[in-house]
Length: 233
Ligand code: URA
Image 1: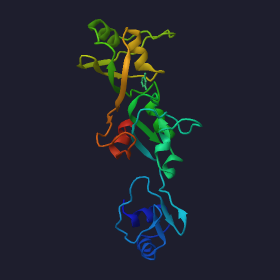
Image 2: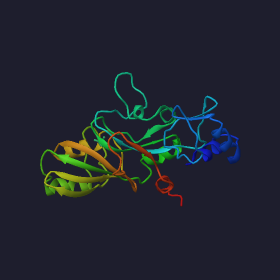
Image 3: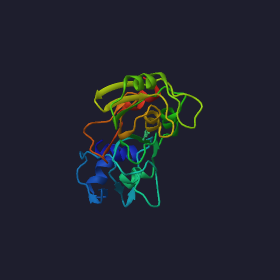
Image 4: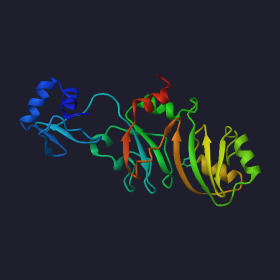
Protein backbone atom coordinates (compact mmCIF):
# COMPACT_ATOMS: atom_id res chain seq x y z
CA UNK A 1 0.00 0.00 0.00
CA UNK A 2 1.22 3.54 -0.80
CA UNK A 3 2.08 5.76 2.13
CA UNK A 4 -0.60 8.41 1.38
CA UNK A 5 -3.22 5.63 1.15
CA UNK A 6 -1.98 4.16 4.44
CA UNK A 7 -2.45 7.57 6.10
CA UNK A 8 -5.90 8.19 4.70
CA UNK A 9 -7.01 4.67 5.72
CA UNK A 10 -5.65 4.86 9.25
CA UNK A 11 -6.65 8.49 10.03
CA UNK A 12 -9.41 10.93 9.10
CA UNK A 13 -7.10 12.67 6.60
CA UNK A 14 -8.11 12.94 2.95
CA UNK A 15 -5.60 11.66 0.39
CA UNK A 16 -4.74 15.31 -0.42
CA UNK A 17 -4.10 16.16 3.24
CA UNK A 18 -2.12 12.94 3.65
CA UNK A 19 0.20 14.06 0.84
CA UNK A 20 0.53 17.45 2.56
CA UNK A 21 1.58 16.07 5.97
CA UNK A 22 4.10 13.80 4.24
CA UNK A 23 5.65 16.73 2.38
CA UNK A 24 5.74 18.67 5.68
CA UNK A 25 8.00 15.94 7.11
CA UNK A 26 5.49 14.97 9.81
CA UNK A 27 5.36 11.29 8.82
CA UNK A 28 8.04 8.79 9.86
CA UNK A 29 8.45 5.28 8.47
CA UNK A 30 10.50 3.00 10.72
CA UNK A 31 11.93 6.07 12.43
CA UNK A 32 12.96 7.82 9.21
CA UNK A 33 11.10 10.90 7.91
CA UNK A 34 9.26 10.01 4.70
CA UNK A 35 9.21 12.47 1.84
CA UNK A 36 7.36 10.54 -0.83
CA UNK A 37 3.63 9.77 -0.88
CA UNK A 38 4.42 6.97 -3.38
CA UNK A 39 6.49 5.02 -0.90
CA UNK A 40 5.26 1.41 -0.61
CA UNK A 41 4.65 0.55 3.04
CA UNK A 42 6.14 -2.85 3.93
CA UNK A 43 4.17 -5.30 6.13
CA UNK A 44 5.07 -4.62 9.74
CA UNK A 45 6.53 -1.14 9.10
CA UNK A 46 6.01 1.39 11.90
CA UNK A 47 4.28 4.53 10.63
CA UNK A 48 4.13 7.64 12.83
CA UNK A 49 2.33 10.93 12.33
CA UNK A 50 3.42 13.77 14.62
CA UNK A 51 5.02 11.15 16.88
CA UNK A 52 1.94 8.90 17.22
CA UNK A 53 1.98 5.40 15.80
CA UNK A 54 -0.78 4.62 13.29
CA UNK A 55 -2.56 1.29 12.69
CA UNK A 56 -4.72 0.15 9.83
CA UNK A 57 -8.27 -0.76 10.78
CA UNK A 58 -9.37 -4.34 10.29
CA UNK A 59 -7.90 -7.73 11.03
CA UNK A 60 -4.42 -9.09 10.36
CA UNK A 61 -3.72 -12.43 8.67
CA UNK A 62 -0.13 -13.65 8.30
CA UNK A 63 1.78 -16.77 7.33
CA UNK A 64 5.21 -17.49 8.75
CA UNK A 65 7.83 -20.07 7.93
CA UNK A 66 8.39 -21.18 11.52
CA UNK A 67 12.02 -21.98 12.20
CA UNK A 68 13.22 -24.89 14.33
CA UNK A 69 13.69 -24.04 18.02
CA UNK A 70 10.99 -21.39 18.52
CA UNK A 71 7.81 -22.18 20.37
CA UNK A 72 4.29 -21.55 19.10
CA UNK A 73 3.22 -19.03 21.71
CA UNK A 74 2.65 -15.30 21.93
CA UNK A 75 4.98 -14.79 24.90
CA UNK A 76 7.23 -16.92 27.04
CA UNK A 77 9.55 -16.00 29.90
CA UNK A 78 12.43 -18.22 28.88
CA UNK A 79 12.12 -19.32 25.25
CA UNK A 80 11.91 -17.46 21.92
CA UNK A 81 8.42 -17.52 20.42
CA UNK A 82 7.17 -17.26 16.84
CA UNK A 83 5.39 -14.01 17.73
CA UNK A 84 8.72 -12.56 18.98
CA UNK A 85 9.87 -12.76 15.34
CA UNK A 86 7.30 -10.14 14.29
CA UNK A 87 7.83 -6.39 14.61
CA UNK A 88 6.10 -5.00 17.72
CA UNK A 89 3.10 -3.34 15.98
CA UNK A 90 2.13 -6.72 14.54
CA UNK A 91 3.19 -8.87 17.50
CA UNK A 92 0.85 -7.06 19.86
CA UNK A 93 -2.17 -7.83 17.65
CA UNK A 94 -1.93 -11.49 16.63
CA UNK A 95 -2.28 -14.98 18.04
CA UNK A 96 -1.36 -18.35 16.51
CA UNK A 97 -3.96 -20.36 14.59
CA UNK A 98 -2.78 -23.96 14.97
CA UNK A 99 0.39 -24.56 16.94
CA UNK A 100 3.49 -26.50 15.92
CA UNK A 101 5.96 -28.27 18.20
CA UNK A 102 9.20 -26.45 18.98
CA UNK A 103 11.15 -28.74 16.63
CA UNK A 104 8.54 -28.64 13.82
CA UNK A 105 9.17 -26.14 11.01
CA UNK A 106 6.98 -24.64 8.32
CA UNK A 107 3.59 -23.07 7.83
CA UNK A 108 2.27 -21.17 10.83
CA UNK A 109 -0.80 -18.92 10.55
CA UNK A 110 -1.11 -15.86 12.78
CA UNK A 111 -4.12 -13.59 12.98
CA UNK A 112 -5.96 -11.03 15.06
CA UNK A 113 -9.28 -12.60 14.01
CA UNK A 114 -10.48 -15.07 16.65
CA UNK A 115 -13.36 -16.42 14.56
CA UNK A 116 -11.09 -17.11 11.62
CA UNK A 117 -8.52 -18.97 13.75
CA UNK A 118 -11.35 -21.02 15.24
CA UNK A 119 -12.20 -22.21 11.72
CA UNK A 120 -8.57 -23.24 11.18
CA UNK A 121 -8.38 -25.26 14.39
CA UNK A 122 -11.93 -26.45 15.06
CA UNK A 123 -12.25 -30.25 14.79
CA UNK A 124 -15.72 -29.69 13.31
CA UNK A 125 -14.32 -27.86 10.26
CA UNK A 126 -12.75 -29.78 7.43
CA UNK A 127 -9.37 -28.06 7.34
CA UNK A 128 -6.75 -30.63 6.32
CA UNK A 129 -3.10 -30.09 7.27
CA UNK A 130 -0.27 -31.54 5.19
CA UNK A 131 3.11 -32.37 6.70
CA UNK A 132 6.41 -33.47 5.19
CA UNK A 133 7.57 -36.22 7.52
CA UNK A 134 11.09 -37.65 7.76
CA UNK A 135 11.06 -41.14 9.23
CA UNK A 136 13.58 -43.23 11.12
CA UNK A 137 12.74 -46.22 8.87
CA UNK A 138 10.91 -46.71 5.56
CA UNK A 139 7.13 -46.89 5.93
CA UNK A 140 5.89 -50.46 5.47
CA UNK A 141 2.81 -51.04 3.35
CA UNK A 142 0.96 -52.31 6.47
CA UNK A 143 1.82 -49.12 8.35
CA UNK A 144 0.67 -47.02 5.42
CA UNK A 145 -2.65 -48.87 5.29
CA UNK A 146 -3.09 -48.37 9.05
CA UNK A 147 -2.47 -44.59 8.77
CA UNK A 148 -4.93 -44.39 5.89
CA UNK A 149 -7.58 -46.28 7.82
CA UNK A 150 -7.04 -44.52 11.19
CA UNK A 151 -4.88 -45.58 14.14
CA UNK A 152 -5.43 -45.72 17.87
CA UNK A 153 -3.11 -43.26 19.66
CA UNK A 154 -1.58 -44.10 23.03
CA UNK A 155 -3.89 -43.17 25.94
CA UNK A 156 -6.81 -42.36 23.62
CA UNK A 157 -9.98 -44.31 22.95
CA UNK A 158 -10.97 -43.05 19.53
CA UNK A 159 -9.00 -43.80 16.35
CA UNK A 160 -7.65 -40.98 14.21
CA UNK A 161 -9.64 -40.03 11.14
CA UNK A 162 -8.42 -41.59 7.89
CA UNK A 163 -5.27 -39.81 6.66
CA UNK A 164 -3.73 -39.48 3.22
CA UNK A 165 -0.18 -40.75 2.69
CA UNK A 166 2.11 -39.92 -0.21
CA UNK A 167 5.43 -41.71 -0.21
CA UNK A 168 8.15 -39.28 -1.38
CA UNK A 169 11.27 -41.38 -0.89
CA UNK A 170 12.50 -44.29 1.22
CA UNK A 171 12.06 -42.58 4.57
CA UNK A 172 10.06 -39.47 3.68
CA UNK A 173 6.30 -39.15 3.31
CA UNK A 174 3.69 -36.44 2.99
CA UNK A 175 0.89 -36.99 5.46
CA UNK A 176 -2.44 -35.13 5.36
CA UNK A 177 -4.56 -35.25 8.50
CA UNK A 178 -7.95 -33.76 9.25
CA UNK A 179 -7.59 -33.22 13.00
CA UNK A 180 -5.20 -31.44 15.31
CA UNK A 181 -4.61 -33.69 18.29
CA UNK A 182 -1.63 -33.17 20.59
CA UNK A 183 1.64 -34.21 18.80
CA UNK A 184 -0.64 -35.99 16.35
CA UNK A 185 1.77 -36.81 13.54
CA UNK A 186 4.54 -38.02 15.85
CA UNK A 187 2.07 -40.16 17.79
CA UNK A 188 0.50 -41.59 14.63
CA UNK A 189 3.89 -42.73 13.36
CA UNK A 190 4.78 -44.11 16.79
CA UNK A 191 1.48 -46.02 16.76
CA UNK A 192 2.56 -47.84 13.58
CA UNK A 193 6.02 -48.65 14.95
CA UNK A 194 8.01 -45.88 13.27
CA UNK A 195 9.58 -42.65 14.54
CA UNK A 196 9.49 -39.07 13.21
CA UNK A 197 12.95 -37.55 12.81
CA UNK A 198 11.87 -34.34 11.05
CA UNK A 199 8.53 -32.57 10.62
CA UNK A 200 7.60 -29.64 8.40
CA UNK A 201 4.07 -28.28 7.78
CA UNK A 202 3.50 -27.53 4.13
CA UNK A 203 -0.20 -26.73 3.83
CA UNK A 204 -3.34 -25.82 5.79
CA UNK A 205 -6.49 -26.22 3.72
CA UNK A 206 -5.39 -24.80 0.38
CA UNK A 207 -2.90 -22.34 1.90
CA UNK A 208 0.60 -23.52 0.97
CA UNK A 209 3.74 -22.22 2.63
CA UNK A 210 5.20 -19.57 0.33
CA UNK A 211 8.55 -20.98 -0.92
CA UNK A 212 9.93 -17.42 -0.99
CA UNK A 213 9.80 -17.26 2.83
CA UNK A 214 13.05 -18.24 4.53
CA UNK A 215 12.77 -19.64 8.08
CA UNK A 216 11.58 -16.84 10.37
CA UNK A 217 10.12 -14.73 7.55
CA UNK A 218 6.43 -13.92 7.20
CA UNK A 219 4.01 -12.22 4.84
CA UNK A 220 0.38 -11.11 4.79
CA UNK A 221 -2.13 -13.62 3.43
CA UNK A 222 -3.84 -12.73 0.17
CA UNK A 223 -7.60 -12.16 0.08
CA UNK A 224 -8.02 -15.56 -1.59
CA UNK A 225 -5.98 -17.30 1.10
CA UNK A 226 -8.04 -15.65 3.86
CA UNK A 227 -11.32 -16.59 2.18
CA UNK A 228 -10.20 -20.15 1.49
CA UNK A 229 -10.54 -20.86 5.21
CA UNK A 230 -14.01 -19.39 5.65
CA UNK A 231 -15.22 -20.74 2.33
CA UNK A 232 -16.67 -17.32 1.44
CA UNK A 233 -16.19 -16.30 -2.19
N1 URA B 1 1.95 -33.16 14.76
C1 URA B 1 3.02 -33.24 15.57
O1 URA B 1 3.34 -34.29 16.10
N2 URA B 1 3.72 -32.10 15.79
C2 URA B 1 3.44 -30.90 15.21
O2 URA B 1 4.14 -29.92 15.44
C3 URA B 1 2.32 -30.86 14.35
C4 URA B 1 1.59 -32.00 14.14
